[in-house]
Length: 230
Image 1 (cartoon, helix red, strand yellow):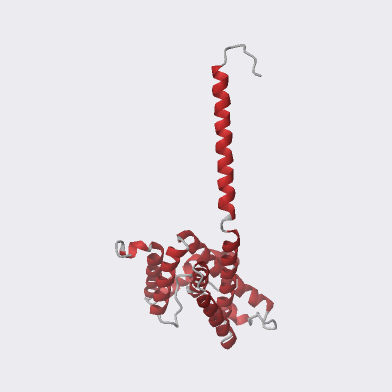
Image 2: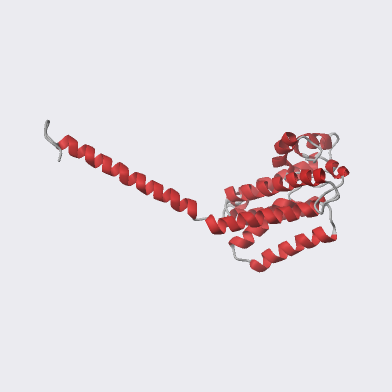
């Protein structure tokens, strides 16, 4: 970080810049309409439209919350995740958990308020954007990778407490993000080294087979014509 500055965390830097950009644009004349068309997700939208907008919805901050909070959260958590988890895993966890929350909102509206995880119909028109679900999920995965069990427990307790104290769409989506992140973290712990070992074994077997084939071909070339191979 001392040597490369912000270039040491390109993913965190780009994500923070996008949040700042969308925050500025949506407060300009006509900007909110533009942002709504490219990055705002609602449960009332067709599923294909929601799926197309979900990647950008992560960077669209809520209108009623201070943007500096989102900027600080995203830069710090995404930067630590880049170092601890790697860029590819950071992107996978962030988008998968954001998508899980988006799909959960649709399911909650579909099952209705009579269910413990259901929502009234008007929730389908609530703007469902922001990086909070991704930040929560990445914090869980970072804590598991670094064995920071107290931090992981605190994040889970705070998100569950938020959902119980303020039972709204954002709170329940955070719980969904926590559950999805826990599944990611546990699967990496259990199967993280399995596929690399399998691929290494396949590569070694292929190398041995190739070497044997080359030796047989070389031996065949050295034999005189008409000689019988025992």
